[in-house]
Amino acid sequence: MTQDQPIVPFDWFANQFTFESREEFIDQVSPYLRSFIKVGDYALDLCCGAGPIAFFLEDQGAHVTGIDLAPSLIAMARQEAIKRGSRAAFIHASVLTHPLGNGVYDLAVCFGNAILDFPHQSFPQFRDRVYQALKSRGRFVIEYRDGLLRVAHMSEPKEVIEQGLDSQILRRF
Ligand SMILES: C[S@@+](CC[C@H](N)C(=O)[O-])C[C@H]1O[C@@H](n2cnc3c(N)ncnc32)[C@H](O)[C@@H]1O
Image 1 (tube, rainbow, N blue to C red):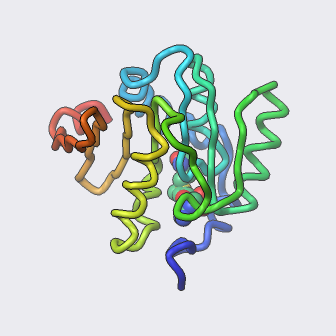
Image 2: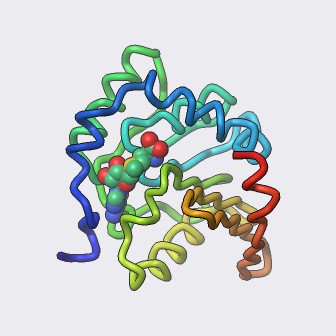
């Protein structure tokens, strides 16, 4: 297995995915996500799957790009974008190799426990790539459900402030 490949193939997720089945999830995370997004923001949805978070961010007024390795899920996202008249862009690629840009995004998110799909060795690479893609004072929000939720807030000068906000966040989700 290379670092590009998820630990689990995501055909199962595509097979069971419906936007209706993700409504409860969106309801849970939306109060939290709303506190990070501003109208006009450029947002990057890492491991976007079929795009439920991407569409939520767009509904809040963001310009959204989603990226995911699973072709079936990206196809669903693009189909849904057409259905909604969405302007969100969906890229079929690995976040570990696809050029994400330099200082482009106000917000990067990685939701749905997608971080679990990455081998631990790839975390620094993942973090560095996201950091480079963000504008200064950009925000990087990761959702991780197994008891640990972290917010990494990127700010100038080049430093990463990691805040363990577990108790606050756990109340919200
Ligand atoms: C549990 S799904 C979550 C999808 C979406 N964020 C959601 O909440 O509905 C995890 C996603 O991570 C994607 N993924 C895993 N490794 C990836 C990588 N290296 N680059 C891009 N996407 C990846 C999988 O294809 C899968 O769609």
